[in-house]
Amino acid sequence: MKNHFDAVILGGGVGGLALAALLSHRGMKILLLERNNFLGGRCTSYEKEGFVVDAFIHMFGRCEKGPYGEIMKKTGAEGEIRFWHPTRENPFVLLKNGRKYPFPNPAYQTPAEMEQTYRQAFAATEADIHSLRSMDETIAKMKYSETFALDDTPMSSFLKRFPMSRELVAFINQQVICLAVANLKEASAGELIRVMAYYQREANVGYPLGGCKAIPEGLARIARRHGAELQTGVKVERINVEKGLATGVELKDGTVVSAPLIISNIGVKETVLRLLDPATMTEQYRDYAESLSCGKLAGIGTIAIHLALDKPVIPDSVAFSFPKDSEIPSLARFLMEFVLQDQIPPTTDPMNLALLPVSSNMDPSLAPQGKQIVHLPGLAPLESAHWKDWVNFHVDYLDTFYPGLKNHILWYDFGTTSMINHYSGRFQPDIVGLAQIIGQVGKSRPPLKSPYENLYFVGSDTGSDNIGTELAAESALRLADLIPKKP
Image (cartoon, rainbow, N blue to C red; front, top):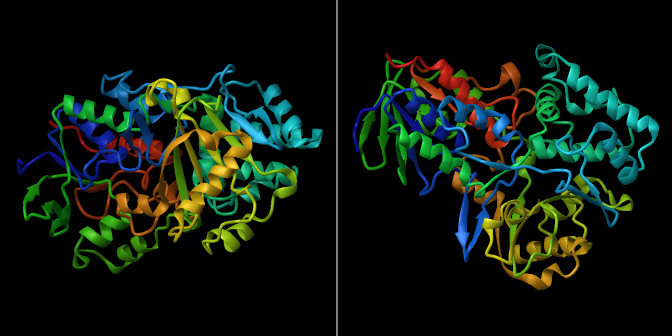
């Protein structure tokens, strides 16, 4: 390995790869070091018996109209990553009360059609419809600069301006959890309004052709095409600092790599508390890093179940389930009595507002001909003494919507929040890094530049106004603009 580069990037998640693509296209000599034996972090897939299985992540919000599209355009690689999108003929579906409805989404429905879905699926009154319409119009018309005044306002407080039925509020909460991995009381209204405005305007939710791994693979191709060196299976022990200047990194084998720019994609908190000598920082900065949070929901376990079926059983590409009207208990009670106690609930309805992506319906190449791969995320303990029972519990629930599905399972795999924690190496289990909650968004989001000269952060922790991997890609775009161009 060469020992000098223009920049060393620590971590091969989406943020690190996106920045490697942008900077190498600019002509900079880039070295990216990833501790795992694969690139992409949580945005990855693996192959098993002819199936391509997404490990943790399943859907994307803006696709080629968002940060990914901008990165491809800036690097002259338009079309490097391609996406599937729902249509009127193949919409997302809402499973509720034993019936199926088009999931309300501007990608394939007019506002009037969305309102009709609310009437049919939720028995929405005209007063409810008026509130929903007013909320959407308020979000659409609000100036970007005005949204920051709501950064410290809970989304639940913002919703009170638009009175509607308890069930519709629960439905909005479901969407907020999908967007921000935070509930209405914890999520920032300002940040969510910025995110929701994008989705209303662009209506471009989708899925990468080739599976989730297509995104890091595409970014890696761009970076390598322009000379970037991407190394996997390399662990960084520390970031070397001299008189407030980050001078390079030391690897586990003792190798020292010098560079005038060090950029961390392994998390702000993890970088500060694990890779930097405490003697080089102020106590205030260390306390700040220690205080950063992945949110309350990060402390609640999730399970992503992957079902390989011997035939196409589910006709829908993406389905969202919603609990039956008479079975909407307190989510907190469900969590306290069952999930946190590692007790299997007595009913087949997990009441956890499940998302069901059928990736082989979006891209048939992800399963052998005549077969199907299905992903079923749900709530489960962080650690369990009987994971098989939790898998069966969620599969039984799915079978109530698609009867007979259980009879066609060839095999199943599953991933958990604790597994994500193992791959990410973070202090706290998380889904998308630091939570987009009050106190951690807008001007309070961790900055791209650290207090150390020439040490920067990239990734979802420093991203804004997006969700998931698109947070990471957005941060790479802003950081690339911040870093001076090579003479």
